[in-house]
Amino acid sequence: MSTDLVAPVERWLAQMPSPAEPTETAVIEGKARFRRDGKGWWLPIETMMWQRLGHDHVVDLRVGLGPLTFIRGFDGYVDGTGFSRISHTLDMGPQIDQASMLFMWSEAILFPDAWRHRDDVIWTAIDDETADIALPFGEAYVSARISFDPVTGYPSSFGAERYKGVGARPVEWIVDYADWRPTDDGVTLPSLATVTWSDEPGPWFRMWIKRANPGADVAETIARGRALLADVAADPTRGSGKT
Image (cartoon, rainbow, N blue to C red; front, top):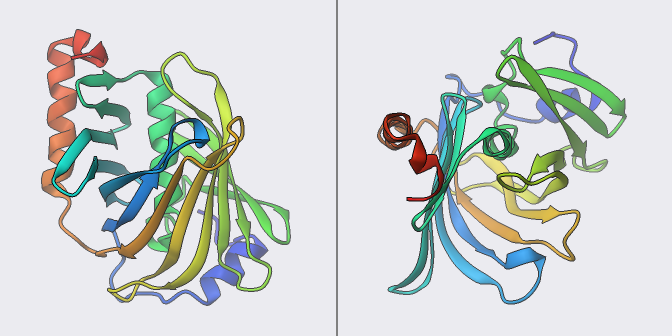
């Protein structure tokens, strides 16, 4: 990456602590809820997000109340390939690759060590409080926009044209970050992340972040993602819907 970072990024990094050792992995924990199509009842989710920051990303999720489980999911972006498994349905393909990559970066962007020393991440100033970031995606790039709070200097949103699923069209997808503070393990992150699709009447996902577990061992969970991809490579019909 160029050493000449754009102004809003420079202001943000100036107030972020620089750890003695680069943060390369994290396991994000918290409470979440979602609702279909941005309307209706909110459903509770237990989720853990495993990150090899800026490279690989796996999410374990369970929709349920107490001991009752309604849906289990396993999503990820591993070795440049995305997947989304909800119960017995596994979706894969170019649109899932792009969607999963953007999901990964919407979290990784909050950890400067994920990208501050990479020469394949390109920032361009839009104005004093907004920047474009070009993210590597195969042999090309995907653009996202980061807005920064004019008072605190911290990122306030991450937006991009993201595919909603296999065969779907790209839609503006926005993650809003609020209430930045140290987590239980001392990492400064937003306490609340809210996700909205622009073609829906309201947010469809909210997560209250409690811990980041910087430097956590994510190898076993990333390996689960690779094993799933290996199974699909052996039987490509598994990545086309019902399994």
